[in-house]
Length: 125
Image (cartoon, rainbow, N blue to C red; front, side, top):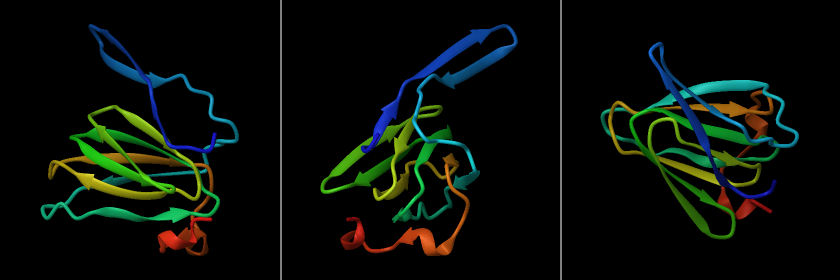
């Protein structure tokens, strides 16, 4: 898969609570790292980078956010709680939290390395 896409969530509700999951096979996505990004009171734009080798899945776990993904042109994803997108490597990501209590969990298929980051959109080839 070589483009950013919104992932379909499935929600199951019962007297015990709510469970949501995603049934989407994404080739070559062995989970190697995850982290949580939280908004701050100033609603600072997060991301502003791409990855050379890392594909990512972003899931809103609280609040709402707009995630802008750039690869030649921008795709805007307006996400609510429990909605997810898949972003392949070499796609620029900008995260705009709409609420000061918003948070996102990010799943990655590579381990952390500062050398892996791309900080200039011109270098996305």
